[in-house]
Image (cartoon, one colour):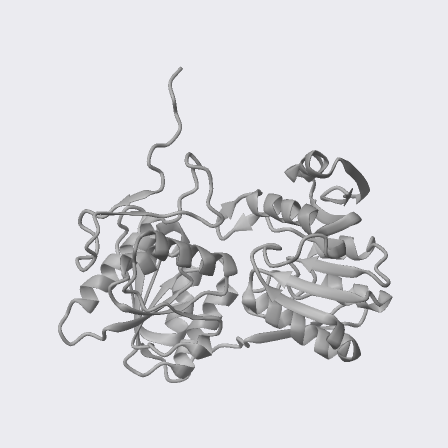
Length: 390
């Protein structure tokens, strides 16, 4: 039988790539490290094109030798440009961990690993590289910050797959910069080169968007938080079937703005942990607890982590979760599967995991295989709520 599995799917050959990089190839993995024959790569052609473009600019004698890299998904861009002084901003904890591991595994010891959680911590804003995110609110938040805080001579180079460099994306760059040039497609990727900041961009964008739930909760959302302007329909369905939480240690896993946990606070759990891999989500959840339940704040913990990697074994009575099934433009259930495995480890004996998910994702079988005891709490045409008991 012919073996159709991809070969060397994690080896990036460097022929003709950034001139200052001395290695002939890089080994790059997503995080957590996937199977050798996984079709999911830790880079794409937009990463390579962005690094090549930046390298040409940085090779000029009077070019700035410091640069900021924003939204490198798994560290490919940082590894390709590791001979330069890097200022690295990632909202994603998975992105942070993947970048650290890939830099280490490829012996990129010379890199100045200046990792930042906030855009305000970036220092090297002369040349800024952006891997264009799927979330356009997040992209506009980055551009708005650069417009307000970067020096006038700041040059921004952004990249994405060619079909993702669309009119809406280019419009955002034109909103904040006078000179915006889109490259020709190269291996189905493009760059946007933006310079000369607009004097007065016309924009109603705000870093924090405020709205109110039907139950009266005041919600504030940062730019890169899922369902930024309203309650998402999966969470809305879950709110009508929340489990009992009084006097329990509860984790709101993949908490987003924390809306599920905020409703559980009314039951007075003994401790409530908000967990998410997005730093902006953790910031949002913390602001929302302070705004709606300030007296309960001391009972809360806000953890920026990959799934439940930093939680102790058998430390929670109840975990609630609205798991994601996208990683940027990639549809995948591997994140949810890791969340379920972590939950099994973190729950106390007889502890419960309650999740809401799209019916077609087949989470019931996955949870039954893991936990053994699994039941349907509620369902509608789109979603299913499942309880798994340890």
